[in-house]
Amino acid sequence: MRALALVAVSTLRAPSRLVRHADDLPTVEEALASADEYEGNAIVDPYYAHPDTLPMMHEWTAETFEADLEAGGHAEWDIPSEAFVFLRTVADPSLRRKKHEDHLVWARESHLKADKDDSKPRVYASQLLRDEAGTEVAGSLLAVIGGDEQSARALVETDPLIRSLEDDVKAYHWTIAGDPYLQLEVWPEGSAPFAMLRLDDQQGTAKRGATREKHLSFLRKTKRCLRAGPLRPLDGSSTPISERAPCGSLVYSFHENEQSCLEWASRDPYVEAGVFTEPPLLLASYCDLDCSGKQVTRPAPFNELPDPVLARLVAAGLEELPERVVQRIERDPQTGKYERYNITTLDPRLESNVRIDDELMAKMASTPKAKRAKRARDKKAKEEAEEEEFMMEDF
Image (tube, rainbow, N blue to C red):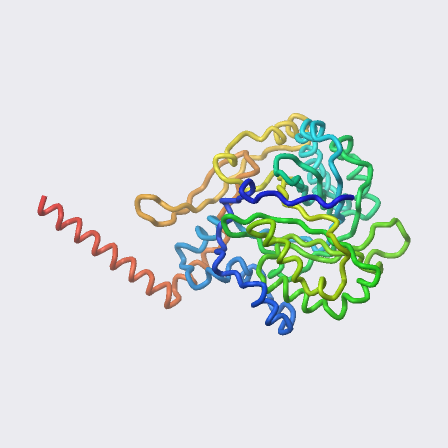
C-alpha cells in the first residue's frame, strides 16, 4: 500500500484548539539533548496535571479556570488503552462521498449498540486521510475499541464505505501509551495533525527494548505527540495479542508543515537505531469525524447546525433525545465576569463546559495569587469608575 502524502496545513487549522503557543515548543535538538533523562510518567492524576493545563496553571484564577480551558477545547480524559486499527485506501472517491453520511450513521450506531451491550465493539475514531493536493480523501483510518479481534473485523466489514475502498486492508492491534504527556489535545495556530504508521525492520523488534525509553522521552519532550503506541499484527492466530511481537508503531503528532513533520520524524531515536523500515507505510494529514455525535469542540457556527445523522438515528428508533438541563459558564461581555447559567435542551451535542466543582473553585479563589489578582481587578475597576465619574463632571 502506498504511503499517503501530506497535505498543506492551511486547510486544516483548528481555531477551537488554540491554547498552546509555538514559542513554548522546544527544538528537536533541545529534546534530544535531554532525552536520556526520561524516568517515566510520574503524574498521579492526569485531570489536574495534564500537559495541556500546565502552561496555564500560573495564570488561572477562579474566574478564568473554566473559560481558558473551554476556549482551547478540552482534553478527552477517558482515553482507551488499546484499539484495533484498520488502514484502508479509497478506490472510488465519488462513491466515498456518497456514502459519507451512511458511514457516520454506522459509526454512531455502533456506539448506541455498545452502550446497551458492553461486549460489542464501537468505532472510537474515524479519520479521513488527505491526498497530496489536499483536495480529496485518499484513505481511511479506523480505530475500534471493545469486543475482540473477530468482532472488530466483523464490525468494520459492515462499514457502508467498504464498496468505495480497495480490498487490501491493513489491520493491527494498537497499544496506546498512557503517559498524558503523549496525549496532547491542542496545537498552535497554523499547525495541523498528522498520522504516521511505520513498520518494523526484520530486526527492528529486537532493537526496540534498548531504545524505548529514549524514544518515549523524545516524543514527550518535543511536545508534539497527540497519541502513540506500538502495533501488533491481527493475523487471526491463536496466540494472545499481548504475547505477539510488535510489528510497528502508530504516532499522531502536530506540525507546521510537511518539511517540519518529516524532519521531526527522522530524528526519532527509533529511526537512528534502525527499528523501522523506510518509507513509512502511512504519512498523512487527516480530518477527524464525529463518531459519537457529541463532539463539542466544533467551532461556531457549525456546532449550531442541524445534525442530519442524528435525525436519521432518531427516525429509525435507534436513539431517544431526553430533555436535559445543562450548566454552562460564559463571560459577560459587559462586566467581564464569568457567569453560570442553565440551558434546557434536547441536543446531545450540548454539554456542560463547567468542569470544576464549587469547592475547588472556592479553594482556588483563596490562594494568595488569586487574592492578589482580585485586588488588582478591584483597584482597576475603582480607578475606571472614578475616571468615568470625573469625565461626567467635566461634561
